[in-house]
Length: 479
Image (cartoon, rainbow, N blue to C red):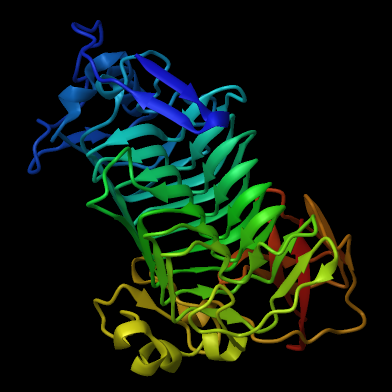
């Protein structure tokens, strides 16, 4: 049987076998044998949906150790997606995904889940001892109750997620809401990112809503490393740019550049850092961390650090705004505290900062210098980005605002679109906080409308290059 009481933080699981299922694998036309040399090849929405049907009717155990590979980009437009490992029956472990899923650097686009009263939602609802890698989920729109993630609802029992990303929005009415993963139990997330708008009531984070141990396991910790988040995170209690609630988890070499807002236990990186957890060598580059109530449980790195937890060598953007219901919160710098040590943006965009051993816990620098390193950076233009993203530094980045009086932008802040004036024969580019181009057009009109409805909330830079070569740069806020 299964009992899920999200509001009371009670999740009980009992495994049993569903027996013979009506679903047959493989579906017609699918190639492969399911081993590492010849994985099952998923190249259509129908194939991916067939995998969901197969797992969700009690065949999850049959995916254990089986390999799957995405061979095309998949567009899920038209689906109200039923998650792979969608547990609407009591037979939990028999309807979890337990295999190896290689995204093959392909994307699943337009993932829509509109199930406001349901839990355990994502492209994958529940994975158990599974592996998901090299997969992008773009333009997702997920609305559920609790335990939601753009990629995975629940990751359990030494599962691994690597080289994955999510863009879009994830919204829940209760707890454990994450841009990438809702609940991360005794599992590893690495080399991944989320550019998302995430909202939930409690335990809500840009990467994971909650990360910690499962049941009474006190011997193993999940790990979160080499990850970043952009966009926005909002909610009530336990709200963090990276992780809402961090328990029995080692978080390292990661950063968040999203705006964070909540009530109690609100932090640029972690809402709460529980005992037996650590956060080291991380950076909070959020423009703002704001609570709507008069609370002291708010800070740049973590809203609260429980006795027995560790904060080592963490940094924060010097211009970050931290406010509660009474106004600006006074912050005291502390390299090994929940405030972190402040640094100017020009330092945080410098390769030298990440390669200087004295800056980092145990003198362990970020892996950023070699051609096979995890990270790369566009010197003086961006924060670090994952090398597998293959960003062209010549095509991105704006260092400062240079405004021309004859350019008008309205409305600003904008929600779905804004208009730019004096754009006849002008080149128009919009960049996100990482310096990545998210919009580009050449205009022949006196005014140009820029659509931003699908972009995450945050600050963007608009560059307008006139036909005579002169240009202006403007800050635009997407709300």
